[in-house]
Image (cartoon, rainbow, N blue to C red):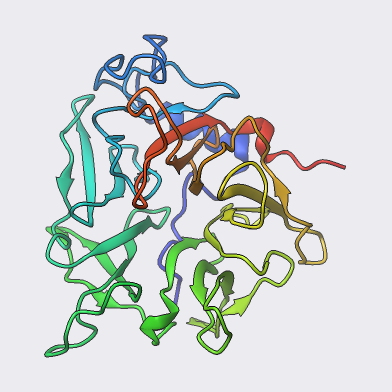
Length: 331
């Protein structure tokens, strides 16, 4: 049985070819209109990147007042065809999406499978045919919704008529583990964050779930990446050559983005902080690299053109920055 994202163009191509193919499929690209970080109203709704001037090495707001509204609790994830973007917001806690038809992006809409119970951390497979998320919805018919601080993994399938009803994804069955932020590699291997309920403190760690012989194996903690503080929201490269995640282990703010590279022997390099050009004195989390490999998109509660001070209560804005220099291994 093939994993759910086996049809992975452009993800299975070499990076340069993937970027060319994906960008060519989008028609006209973003033009230098104005920087979103300087003027919250300075974007159109046309083109793949909303008419925004592509950022360089300083993060700027991503689609302010459309996608970024000071209530986001995720990155912004593109669908395979570049015609949809998925993200999550708080107050209410739900999953939203926007679509691009005729070159223009729509207003955000609540996902058809979300809105009744708290749902977070949407993660779309590279072919766009399956979407994972974490929810407090009742784990079985007749059960009660899960309390705050607990959750289980669910997924929906794209069908010819829309999305299927949510199904439990039972690689983790204890809701106290709070599995979240699934990232799927081309091999079918999954990376996610969760708690070990048998360890004191219930700290979040990054786990890999191997896909072998048509089934998923038991989650295994990535020991090199783990720390005594929470590590969460992983994003794995399609070829598993690198992993980006958020950690509270110390750095420039409350939580920073880190990267680790896969070695030839299958191990992982020591974590490297992405540095002060990306991380802030606040909280930076939920990394995601666009399918063309050009941009790192992430969430941050830092001060911005939309908010004079850091945002509290778990919410933030979505930012983007040039990815290329960040993804290169260093000696």
